[in-house]
Length: 355
Image (cartoon, rainbow, N blue to C red; front, side, top):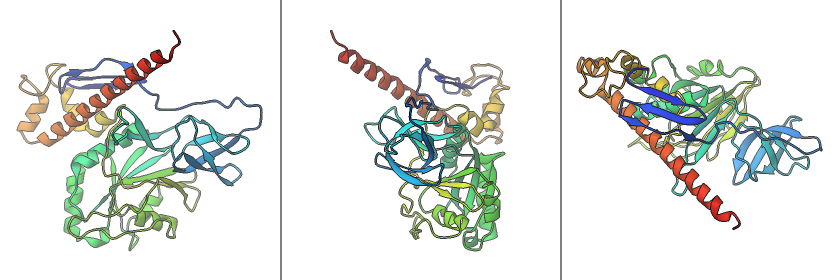
């Protein structure tokens, strides 16, 4: 790939000529966890519908719901799991077909990931038509969604609360970063667009909602389910921000056999190591980079640079290139944190060895 190349596998390898950085491969944590049940007793299978401080609520295949402990296993809402025969603990996690992951955002958890949701088919990125469109946040959400393995769809809520001109302008700004990603306007009050959301909730499918607090996720969830399963709260008039009404990720059954995974409002959209997420979220930059004269073009002052030419003629906003560079730099920093964490764990392991 000319100009920019991203390649991430179980060994995180990334060459980013856009910012002139080359990282060295290292062993990263696997995206999917597979553990095996070795006991002789019959296994009990189910799906995690909620997590709470070391405990999982698991919906079993026989439709019972049990609460079991998570000991020595990384789990997420949406996981298909095997629990012990006595129904006391999670024993293993099936391979995840998709996983929405981000970097842990609290101090002391550097280089570790948070699995927000797993085994999802569609990720709805929820934004409000009442708020000024935030392209930079949406770019981050798109990277997370593409890397998860699910299909991203942008949802613009509160269609009933704005005039047609405002809605058109928000959609125009949003379209500058969404490209082929579907964008749906909805109103949970009058039902506008809700059927389009339901069309993704086919029998057996799982859809997930992510977005900031106050964008109308909980109201939309209630409209889809048909009754109030999530509390809603008023947003502040001055900044259109709301309080967290969803306090934990939860898997909710929808009419017709689909599942809805609602997540708490995400104040910070932190990235984990990327597969092709950045490339897919920035197709405009990567397509231009393919035609640069030099393969290692940094898009600064090199001759015959297609990216800088597009910026100069106004077809590529400089903010797009800057945003992509920031995201790449952030992911490189996450990789460095992972390397350091692995080194620290190795050192602790050596110290534990007997002389």
